Image (cartoon, rainbow, N blue to C red):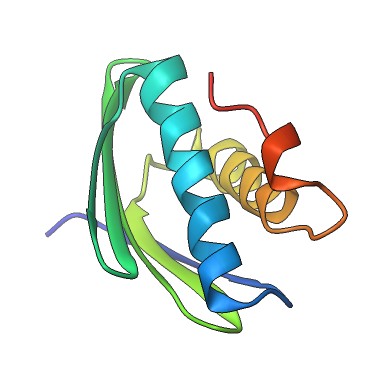
Amino acid sequence: MAKKVNMEVAHALPLDDALARMRALTDYFQNKYGAIVAWDGAKGSIKVRQLMIDFQYDFVVDDRKVLLEGTDPGFLLRKTAYDYLDQKMKRYLDPANPLDSLPRR
């Protein structure tokens, strides 16, 4: 069975705002990388192929954090992928960044 990575990013936003920001982030991934995005309430998934590697991430947004589980790209890319996702989620969930200023493309 393939290895998985797990992340948790805390936030201090109302749930509706956190969801709107995560939807903005998934729009960004869809527009920039051609990711396939699906939402079901506060749960989402992203599938994308980059660097000839298939990535799939499932996440849940609640009123205090976003939990993410997904593809482990392996030893060589693990830290890069983890840091990229962590940085993007923290930027999009930061209340200092107005929602309408967050890129969707």
